Amino acid sequence: SLDADGWFALIGGAGAAAGLPISAGDLRIGELEWFGRRFGAMALTATPQPGLLQLSVKGRDIEGAASWRGQGRGRLTARLRRLVLPPRDDAAPVAAQTAAAADTGPPELPALDVVVDEFQVVERALGKLELQATPQGRDWRIEKLRLANPDGTLNIDGVWQSWLSRPATQVNVRLDVSDVGKMLTRLGYPEGVRRGTAKLEGSLTWNGSPQQIDYPSLSGNFVIDVAKGQFIKLEPGIGKLLGILSLQSLPRRISLDFRDIFSEGLAFDEIVGAVKVVKGVASTDNLRITSPAARIVMHGSVDLARETQLLRVKVSPQLSDTLSVAGALLGGPVAGVATFLAQRLLKDPLNQIAAYEYDISGSWSDPQVVKVDRAAAEAATP
Image (cartoon, rainbow, N blue to C red; front, side):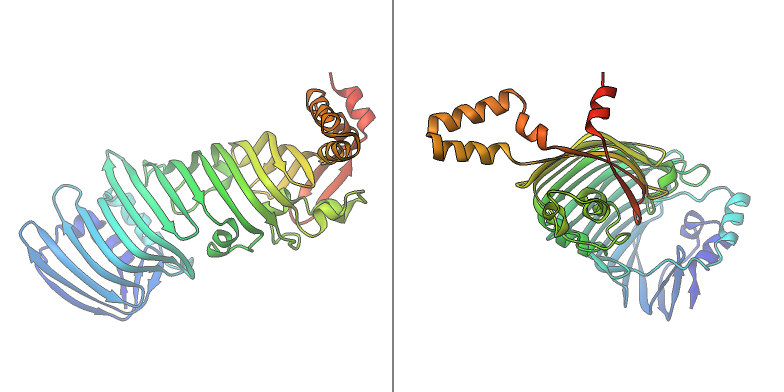
């Protein structure tokens, strides 16, 4: 076994390791400890070339070729057929590495140009990975991070600021999903949604490294646009945020005249909204869900770290268009069109009359739902 974390701490990081007078190597490693993860058996060969060191690696978790240029902070170029990141070993002794960094100064991250055809984190096959990053002073700029698979594509660029002394991550994110349900399953979550396409775009910041989001410090803005899907009935606590959007807590907590809309999974045409995040609390003023059965408007906040919510939800069953069609059949097409236009000009008075409002609070696993007294709510509205 080889404890790479321990050796880097001893010699002062990757920059110092690059200066060691190694011209060639032929290693067989039964187990490699690196960045708090335990990699399986692998074989590594290193061959000197003019100005660089050519590397070839083959093992259970990694296979491919790479080259290392030691000038400046160094540059690693890798073309890998497979890379599997095993689970992080929380018991790994990283204190020695931190102490060594305090004595010798923070190690400097090199430039990276990495392409992995099959990238996997634990048991989650995430697809093709492309990563390009360069050091800038005390920061590390992520010029391109792209993950692509048959279910969607994630594109990220940003910067890992003062990455060891006071690390913070700032990124721009764009996610395009061709099948929401399959993407959720690929990421290890309950399916939650059948079918559906989605786009998410925005900017986010948090304290710490890009590898793990720190929800108490998470801040930023993003917009979401989801189309043509259906929520699947989930148990409380399992669905997490999906349980909020699907409104499955409503029929469990209160008797509804339109109970069937939510009880077996809400089919939707569109979910659109803008979300602002401040220190882990996500808020929205007008997140809209359009469904063949109802129109839903949601505003309020969700605490991502504590997994709690404070939301006002307005549900309007789709009555107007149905009555317009009935009017066209019974009173003729002119009457039907006139009824439809009148409803739109008057902002759907029939749907407004039939609308219901609810306050949803408490935890995601045990939401508390209270029906809002419409007369009191309207009297309190300026």
